[in-house]
Length: 305
Image (cartoon, rainbow, N blue to C red; front, side, top):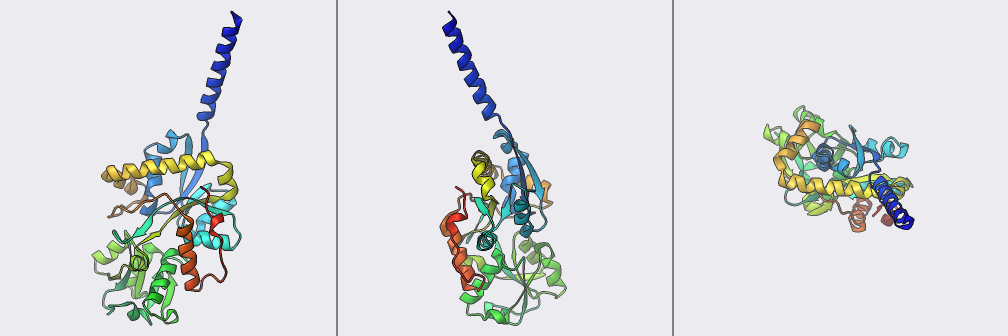
């Protein structure tokens, strides 16, 4: 009589234990910058997709993407947005930063990155930028590395182009005021500059360098990522569901983007979660070509699967 009861209570204990484990909530501090590239995380938060997977996510807006790695390494963020070039520079410096998921890719259609030239200047080719002052959102950034690679591919002497840092939101005013002659800019900032004739598109330079290249990447500390595989997997799954939502509910997704960022991107960005060693090796090669790297970098240690 007692044995069946004992077996029943034992089974019940196992079941309740399993429920307790599965219901365990992980707190995540996640950093993002105000750009449409990171919309899947905003959608996942707004639509409860993180909660659904027992992730208690706090989204923190970071003004400058280059500040994200230091916030992660200091422990104030668990995960945050970054770029392949930052990840490579971190590896080159021996910092324990790893990619956990992709953000977007830069593709030929839609091409969201362009060189835009100030209205009133004459420029029909890359060579016309020699002697000009060109703004990029950050030295050693994706925009900068790919811009320098494009110039080299077009036979331009890099020393003859004055490349300076200029934040995306300020590029339009800097062009209008004549401080800059051209900018390497992406959506939605590109559309605003072109719409009021502040500037004109010279070339979709990123697509000309590579028609399908990794854009953004979600990163974290290696030790944390390896110690929290369930949280990393749940984060990826939440982003994947959010990307599906964006594709089928674009209007609502844009409303969420407007809610969090104050603007919406006019094109559907090519969101993509997979990141491969080959994606990073492409940037290592480009960085070496433009003079930003002088030694090999082992990309195999830069990703957590």
